[in-house]
Length: 253
Ligand code: 3Y8
Ligand code: NAP
Image 1 (tube, protein in one colour):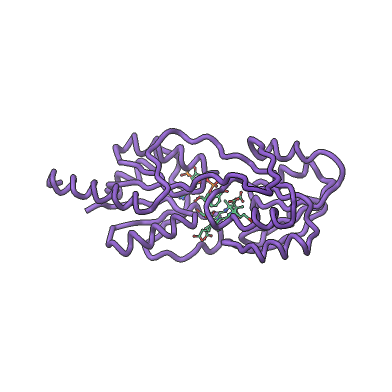
Image 2 (cartoon, rainbow, N blue to C red; image 1 turned 90 degrees about the vertical axis):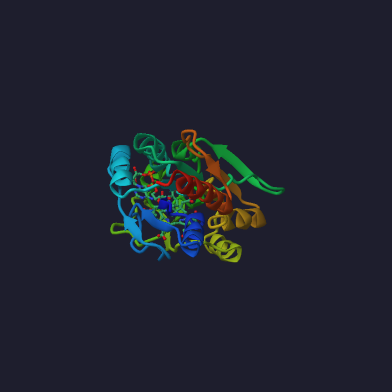
């Protein structure tokens, strides 16, 4: 029977963990340990880095993992690159469960930028009120544009105050709602929204809210990730595992 390591941290990874648990597949879900109390899962969880691609390859061998599933966030580019390298090193089949990138709809006012740095330099100019929906890890880069008032949203309350001179902080984990995000943007008189092209449903509310309020969105495009077998539907992952289980049974290993 397959023994799966599921690299998680997204809504889709949590949904897949539920399907794997329901199908009785021996699965361990892995979190980086970025948040204080990650969502409880219906499968055993491990938390923390592996120590690069070599560390992950060792983990795969030592735990006799037969299949690696990368269901991490599209901006978790280092983890995904490590998964490709480790799967090759350990000879472990790898599949990625990803969500399609968001595309602008009628009424959207998006401008695309390549990365967080480009989003920062794109904010040069007179002070405005900006919703920075990027979480905690990239806030310091926006000190280069201190003139704005920033609305920050973190999963956990930070130990130290964010380094931006003018900011409001909301502590809330998603998935978010359109009504909630409209209310939040109105309360803070937001003029611009800055976000990542995360895709999926958990972070999408702010796009509909911005559209409703006619606000411009700075959309940070996804980082490059090495080629790998990639699907968007959790059912395709289960099918991939079924084929694998059948071939393991045939080979009698
Ligand atoms: C630790 C696991 C679930 C998964 C929920 C999804 C939806 C809610 C929306 C906004 C955007 C942001 C941020 C966000 C969303 C889901 C999903 C998603 C964006 C948790 C989680 C972990 C993380 C890490 C965290 C990052 C931060 C990014 C906040 C759990 C809740 C901005 C990304 O404080 C920190 O250090 C946070 C770091 C990486 C990005 C950043 O740069 O700060 N996610 N988010 C995972 C781990 O330890 O391995 O705590 O339960 C997961 C989710 N976050 O099962 O319910 O699927 O995308 N997460 C972005 O998309 O732009 C918030 O505010 O509108
Ligand atoms: P990252 O920059 O690609 O990864 C940096 C390092 O963190 C990795 O090299 C690895 O350490 C460790 N790591 C990352 N994900 C891990 C996991 N699932 N299990 C074990 N170790 C992990 O990743 P990130 O952008 O910091 O994201 C961290 C986690 O948050 C991921 O699980 C991701 O799915 C989730 N998340 C991220 C975002 C985002 O915007 N980036 C949004 C929502 C959720 P070692 O090299 O030591 O193995």
